[in-house]
Image 1 (cartoon, rainbow, N blue to C red):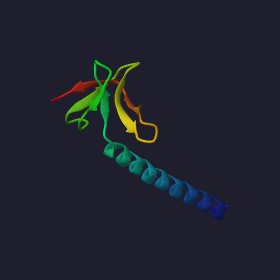
Image 2: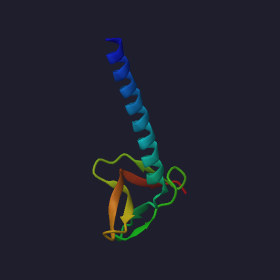
Image 3: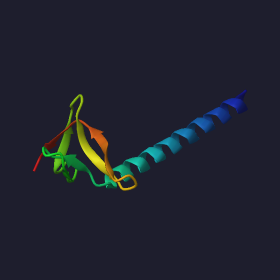
Image 4: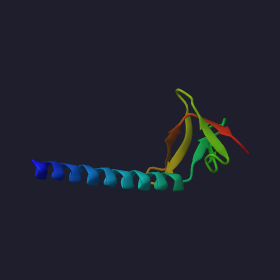
Length: 87
C-alpha cells in the first residue's frame, strides 16, 4: 500500500511541476507578442507595454488588445476588457 501511495504522490508532484513550467513559458511567450488595439476608425495600432502604457479594465463585451496572426493575416483577440491608456 505504501508503494502505491508513493507512486501516486510522485506522479502528482511531477504533473504539478510540469504544469507550472508550461504555464510560465506560455505567459512569457504571450507577453513577448506585440499587442494592438482597435482605434475608433477601425484600424489597429500598437498598444505599447501593459501596465506601463495601458491597462485593461473590466468590460463585459469588449476586447482590450489583439495580436496579429501572420498565418491568416488577421488580428485575433488577446485580452478581454476595455483599454485605458496611462501615458
